[in-house]
Figure 1 (cartoon, rainbow, N blue to C red):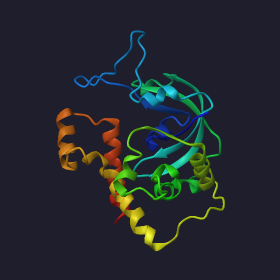
Figure 2 (figure 1 turned 60 degrees about the horizontal axis):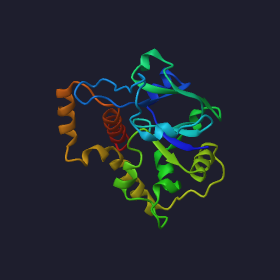
Figure 3 (figure 1 turned 135 degrees about the vertical axis):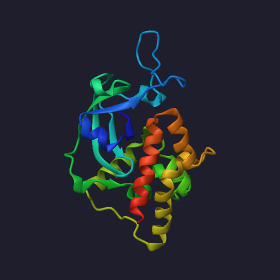
Figure 4 (figure 1 turned 90 degrees about the horizontal axis):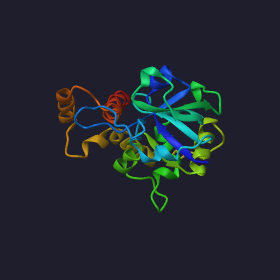
Length: 220
């Protein structure tokens, strides 16, 4: 069994709460999905090929939400199960715990507690490194981290860091999470202008921009 964090917009959950859609490779010039010799979509991320039936994952929504909304199991896939998601690979999913809004796990709690966000010495990653850990759509994590997310979701007794000294660091991580797309010599305004010329946002670019808007609202 594998364990994952899958980054998916909240709007996608509203559209199909029994599915996840993972991106496929697209032609850079036309934006059309690329298919293999059998006519099937090619996953954008190779990790998609490692998903198995019964795998468990945390459903993480980027900005403006920035939380894990629930824990799910892979039931079936990959396939095409929704006509309005006709340019992605779909997996059928089901929650392993009833979805309850008051149980949502915020991004800051993930960073403070998961080994996924720590270096080899057990220290929380610097803001830039932590923000880049959730860039993309599918992230593999170990069983220990998945159980930590589950404990957080169920509000079990965890010794959560409360020292004020950590607050600034976590706030820095939150404020730089949206900057991951700017570390490739593109300013945020430059990315916007480029997208205006291209006429469309990629899924990752849209996630980064939405994340920025949400963080700015949180910091007001």
